[in-house]
Image (tube, rainbow, N blue to C red; front, side, top):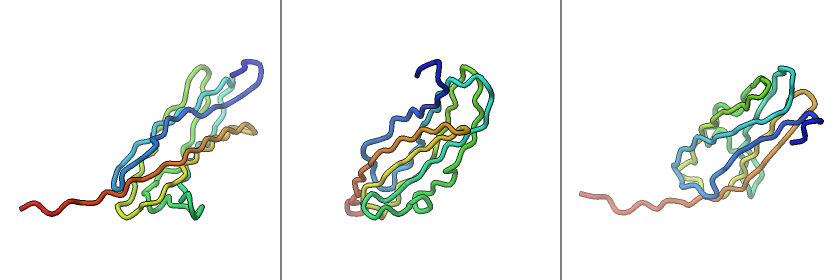
Length: 123
């Protein structure tokens, strides 16, 4: 990031593929070069890739909004927990948007799911 221009940037390594029933703690960082403390927001949205409708509730994305304060020379780090439902077999979009004042950054990923087919019951 250029030091002369105020900026924020989201860092996140998202999984490429998840299994149905799998729980995730998505680790996200917001990096900034702001010298003053300001409050910002970071939002996670989960969207069905085919229908473009929200699946946040279905995925138990119960903390989609996180507030943070820009502290000089410190990164903000947070985890967003969610679970892929057992009966979900489509891919989904994972979208992160950070705002601080009039500054904004966003990042998105398309994640595919592997529907898990259970084997016969063990006796």
